[in-house]
Length: 204
Ligand SMILES: N[C@@H](CCC(=O)N[C@@H](CS)C(=O)NCC(=O)O)C(=O)O
Image (cartoon, rainbow, N blue to C red; front, side, top):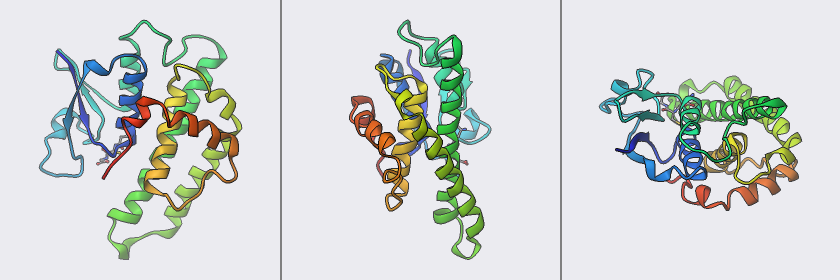
């Protein structure tokens, strides 16, 4: 029986899970259940009381969330190079970079809600700017460590960073994160070409 992933094609957190599964030979273990977390009629809260994707239903009916928990679970299912290195300083760098990339997503999703979903008359420019500043600082931090993102197969730091940069391109195409961060841009150009990334380009 497959694992069932509550899936949305535009969610960068879902993308991280799908890319991680593909990069460790687990793609065949996943079945997708199309889910719109914004539809009040969707039964998602029955699986995840937080009403968010991704959520992963296991064969015994257990549901795992959120994406950091799910990718750790996936890491327990294979014998290849770990998504999360087990020991040493590298482990903590990977954990932190995963958190940094997810933080870019959290701020980016917050901005999208502010700019697209919230009624125009309630737009809060200072809040939007605060989130943008978080993203800019996090990108600078990521760029300083761009060299450490290289590696084949990629670890969860690289996968999360790639999905975060892909999300910025998808939702904020007019904001050029590349110009002042050439090393990060060069790394991402190669990473975005991987089949796992090409197969999960967000649409819609
Ligand atoms: N920390 C969560 C974030 C998940 C998340 O925010 N997902 C968004 C879609 S991109 C969602 O389902 N939003 C619906 C909501 O917040 O009600 C994770 O890593 O899984």
